[in-house]
Image (tube, one colour):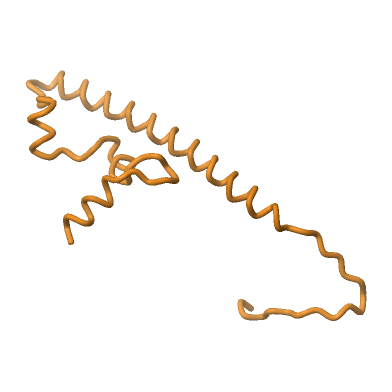
Length: 103
């Protein structure tokens, strides 16, 4: 089950264009293979501050990208819903069905 959760959290979502983990944390998860491939372990405090600053900038960029993608998706859904929308006018005395399920 953990592997399924890991795969889901690291696969790109169609609405945001990024993986859920990447949206929250600002980067892909660090696994031993990541360390070996990139060799990015801080040597001192100044490098750590630089890495955190870069991480924050990347995360801000991802949030802006996700906001833009969500706006595009919202517009697509609205355009689709508006195709079947029609204005209905009622006159006094017209009989209508009233759904009181949520009242």
